[in-house]
Length: 306
Image (cartoon, rainbow, N blue to C red; front, side, top):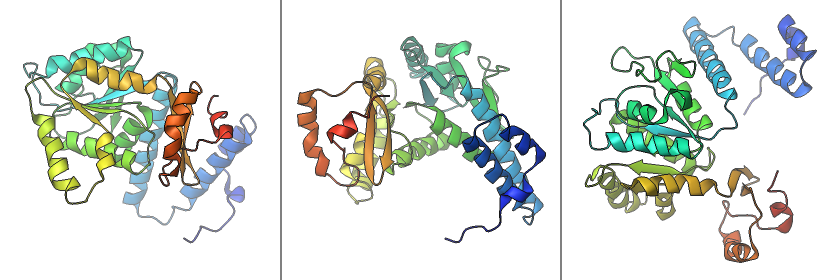
């Protein structure tokens, strides 16, 4: 792929030069490169520049809001904005958010009504974030999060999705329409392809409902049987109608897991505590399972704890 030519050093804005005097070289290099990219965009049409400008503004502001809560785990709740309070799963969404806050999590939603409102009722205003999308209809902020400094408005779905994925540590999905399924498959695709961090994903509905079970059957009978997904892809998530099971799926995930990343085709997992000898023995056979294998070398395990 061809690279852009030209040295940005001769085009540094005074603000960047001032910034370099008070901040580290690594951040200054990134800011300089960013400004250089903007300057190389002069020949773009005005409409394209407006998209770039708005997208960067939205990301910068959203990231600044979340920066103050970087050390707090968060769960993102998706679901229909049209679900009434009488929906059988409305109370489940509220109770789930309450339980997650009790477990030390904050709750992120799209900031709208329906299941999003239910989750933020359960979490409370102080423990809630709202990522609202500006639409010509339907998506106004719910009364729990309205006018809160943790409510962020987006013009573009793609910037909103990026913040959802980047800032969350778990996903919980309640029944919904096109938007909910879009968010569900976005999360699963990023997990499947290794483009996002490993996080637990739960699909929840009221007891006696078959909404997500029917969806799961579609995956098995059409996607899996046709070879469009792998059997292991069905282990990326859990479908349940049980509140305790949903909460446990998320909280137990983080009992020892810290983070993960790919290095030269290998998935390296950082743990909070070193695995026991027995656990190492159980995991060692996985070391030959391909590009996503666990590296079980002693020197890797000793680096897992910060």
